[in-house]
Length: 204
Image (cartoon, rainbow, N blue to C red; front, side):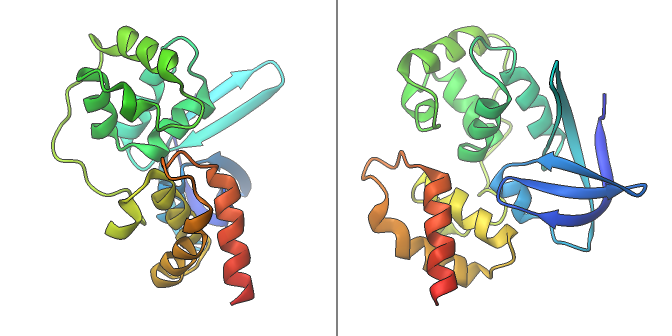
């Protein structure tokens, strides 16, 4: 098990970062918020969780140990795989996730792409008695501005752009440019909106 990786950030993409450790480049899958905290050429230390399957070994990286432990707890719920658990942490902060589970806030959990009402109810049922209560007031996700918190997709797209090297101001302008393409209920295809935002910036 790889508990953490520490090394120079060699590359940051839309969904992962490559960290050079002892001359080996390790690809680490991260949320946009985590990616926004990384800069190419700088050293980083990321708590990690490694998922081993018959045909793959995938490393997931986190901002801190709290996110990592919550990610691993989410994996114990029926129907929650690594991608869904990561999406939950991309949309909701650890405290918001704990609050949603402990208060049985189905609506908050269904904001996560891939989680429907039945799935949210199942997660609440299985984790409510095991998950820790919120530790305090939730902070904005790393790399996002207050304006980017208006809808879940805004924070994710904004953080992804900042992680790719665009300034916060440029990212905010691109988010505003693609906002008309997002559904009114805030449940959006984040990857598609991120690509559209990148096209908007390239045209500018």
